[in-house]
Length: 87
Image (cartoon, rainbow, N blue to C red; front, top):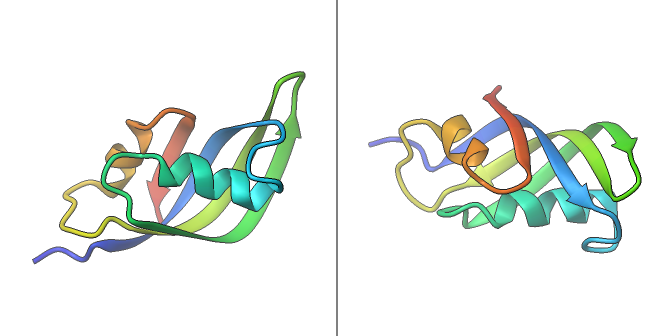
């Protein structure tokens, strides 16, 4: 049985004003990926603003609620997730 909880480093695109703060925006983007049950943001490593969005690198713990063969690929399939790698 595979572990449903994984620690990853992600790069995401967060719409400005989403979820009130940067960490909340990261939680929202990652949490909207299919199969994600819970997201905890540990570290915001960088934040790069542009006219409409924030580009954020962060370390997160993701609970998929079930077995996932490739958690990084699952996250990369989500809207706004640019990169993901298992720590």
